[in-house]
Length: 112
Image 1: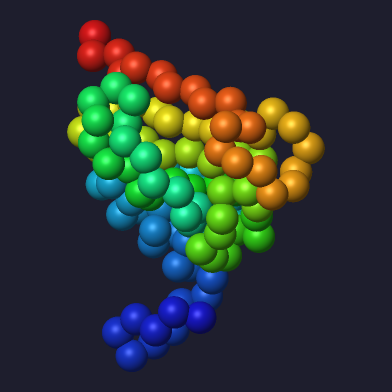
Image 2 (image 1 turned 90 degrees about the horizontal axis):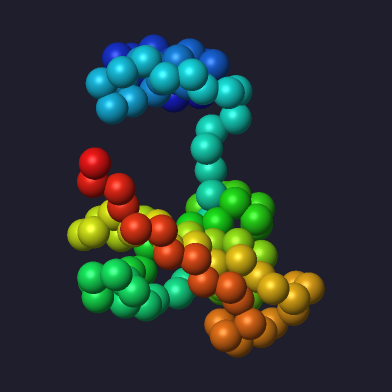
């Protein structure tokens, strides 16, 4: 329950409010919140060089936990400077591996 104005909201009511106020538009939401885990990994953006340190993954328990990159098969970040989507996907089966054993994907932002 979420306390609001001396009352409480159910989980569904809180989700409805989040859907209504999210970015000023009504968006469709499932009953589950969009949780993820934070991946401890830093690098410079391959497109513009800005430091990236906000990698996320939905491969883990999705409890906003701080996890190591080798604990998941996929993790990603969006460069706030140039808009490049940076995504790592594991190439080999899951075990503790160096970053070189991941496939790096960078998608350039389309400004048109």
